[in-house]
Length: 257
Image (cartoon, rainbow, N blue to C red; front, side, top):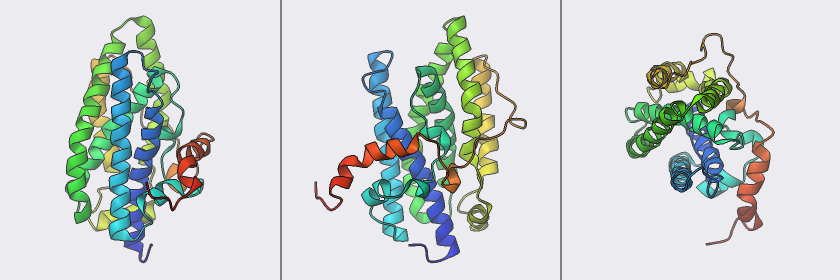
């Protein structure tokens, strides 16, 4: 599958993006039937479906252009160490304040990734990026609206959202974990501008929204990111999720549905 260093770097980039989307999609789907109101059951279910669709689009590029296994096999039959998702997406849904803050922080970063990718020199990725950027726009609007609403809903609600931000922020910085040997190749070929540029753009984007909600952003310089996922090191929560989401497929991977 990986025949040269540049293809290895491209495979790494698309895999980490797809794995983030796949795992967060499955996590968000767990809110179906549990949301605080029926509208949120529908919203989180819809966003979960979108995320899994985003993963399928990326896995399909890997299969059709870079000789990866077909998307179902690549999604469901790898070992835990071969997944490249960040720790933020792996954690159980917890309380609604955590899931909403994770949604807010992740989707703004995701939106920026696809904005950057729309200008990528990687031709296979540009049409998908344009399409997904439009979908994720509605995810970020949803996150912004609920963040603002909950932060103005009283002292307890505000305090819970601030606590969720404090907890999620180091995990969110792990989205931008670097593997320099891969990233340098991607930057040299103008495929991707690099995680540091993405992180700075993300901070600029989320800061005014957090200020509007009177939330205090932890200091990015003095906050240690929770890394590991991009190198295949994961939380205790990933393997049980992989077992659950691949159980039916693993019964007969050759089955035609």
